[in-house]
Length: 168
Image (tube, rainbow, N blue to C red):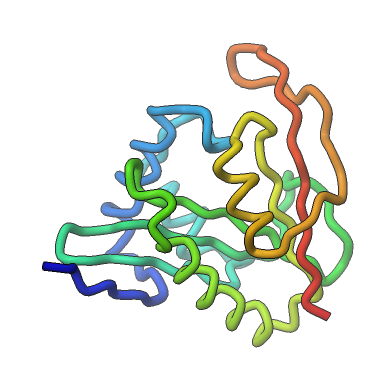
């Protein structure tokens, strides 16, 4: 029997489940630039309650949180982007990638981006995150910049590929 997919904007009550999902991805490593676990409070401040937030689309089914996609105006410390650009991040529960969850989240995020008058979206992805690079390319994002040899916490240099999607 197929599960019913529930798509909606994340609320503060979703923070524990979404934080657990993100922390599991961080613990596996290799598919996110995040390298340290989040507390629920830090998760809320970063993704749900942030003043820069445009959207935090979330997907759930009867088993719990399946993923979320954040879209925000760049915060201090983010990689610089031109005026009118937003920054996106996508996270799908480990083992469920490639099943269309990200596509569903993208449909919601794109509506929110247009409503907020976003001109373009930046997705900055680790060069070793091949599934993430494929995902954003599949949505129509194209390479626009490379940040060379940004060190991981252990000092390992990893390039960051910057992809863009113009909405104008």
